Amino acid sequence: MIIKSLKAGRRLSLRLQYTFIFAGLMAGVIFLTIILSSVLLPWYYRYSRLKDIRKEYKMLVSGDENLYEDLDEMSLRNNVSAIVLAPDSSVIYSSIKSERDIELVLLSIIFRNPNGSQEIEVVEETDDYSIRISKLPEGDYLEMFGRLSDGSAFLFRTPIESIDEASAYASWFYFYIGSICIIPGALLVYFVSRRISKPILNLSDISKRMVDLDFEARYEGEDAAEISLLGKNINTLSESLEESISELKTANNQLKRDIEKKEKAAKEHSEFISNVSHELKTPISLIQGYAEGLKEGVSDDAEDREYYLDVIIDEASRMNKLVKQLLSLEQIESGDDVIEMQRFDITEVISACLKTSSVLFRESGITCEFDEKPGAFVWGDPYMTETVFENYLSNAIHYCKDVGEGKQIKVSFIRFDKIIKVCVFNSGDHFPDDQMPKLWDKFYKADKARTREYGGSGIGLSIVKAIQTSLGQCFGAENVQGGVVFWFESEGVTK
Image 1 (cartoon, rainbow, N blue to C red):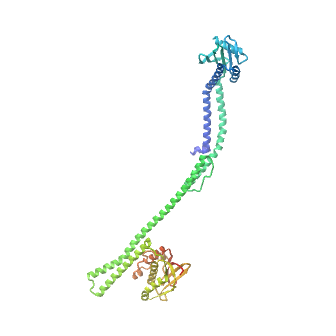
Image 2: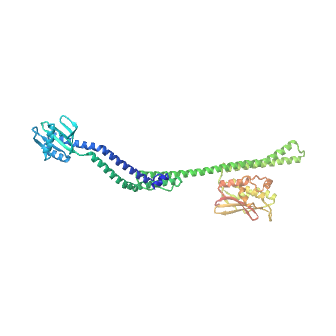
Image 3: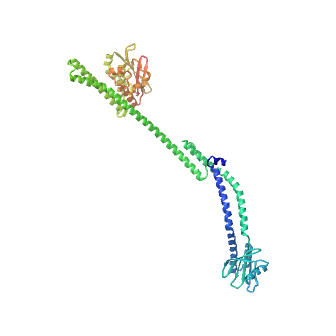
């Protein structure tokens, strides 16, 4: 598995990395221990033996009451042979029973009669004592000898084992034991490291899901303090990112809607300018043409001049009406037109409008029926409600046709809950279904020739839409048997 990972150029897993790091550290510690042991162990061994001898010397010169008992104990513990000779060469103290051997050594030192095969290495020498290493065929000895203040001579002697050989054995022992311990130790680390690598892999999986904008995953482990803290921080980061992205998406959607709204407004503005220009072009051309004709005296007949003036007045009146309608529509749509909500009888408003239009009914041969219901009180703006009804009535008068029973206009109420629905029916042709939604667009004319004939501008139903939208009430148009019904709703109240 390791070889395949290396060949594939993939990084080793965290568990394997821990294992190799542990094995490497163990091997390093073992080799460092072997090297230091080889270099420092002989020095430390000699230092320790010198320290033991100096302790016994200090005890000897201290002259304590229990001196010789303490020397026996220390000599036995440190493997040091000690002897003290009086000035007459008699033995005052000896730490070993076979005192003759060590006595001869001390005497040979005193009388400077060394063994011929003896090799001497002086370690330290003072006025009171001398420390040396005697290398004999049977072994090496560390010796300390001198004289006390009363003239007696002393000798401390301890064997020095072959420390180099011991160091070599120790190094190989460390090597074998370390090599044996590395394998089970590495396996133990491999399995124990799963506890550390598992939460880290869990955090890695959570971070990958966060990259894919999945913020549902949460770290729920209770591990080592650092990993647990990292998990909590990732959870906090996930929540913050989710909230930020949500806000960003909301702002982005709002920006998108604003851009679409602005583009739509720009398009409508362009269409509005185009339509207004088109609507004003004809009356302005007529006024200009007839005015120039009058100025140039095209006709001397008084009746012709009267006709020219009537045309100029009619077209000026159309232009004036169109401008007023446009101003009214702009005020309503922009919200600048103040809505005065009042409680009023809608029957009275409709009756007044029908009475004013009675002359037009007679001239056009229209029969108007009104299902009058006195006391139909509603909440709204009386002026705006009147404007809506007048636009419906004007539209009905100009599109009314005889479809079998004469030209008819019928005004009726439909009450449900607290809503009063006002319906204006006119006999005539149906509107195509695909044209129904367009009736409320500015300057839209279902029958352009007929609209031009009676002087319509295509603004009236747009004004209806703007007024009803500002009042928060419904409106619409439907094809019914024998004609078309335009309707609008008002909020009804109890009398």
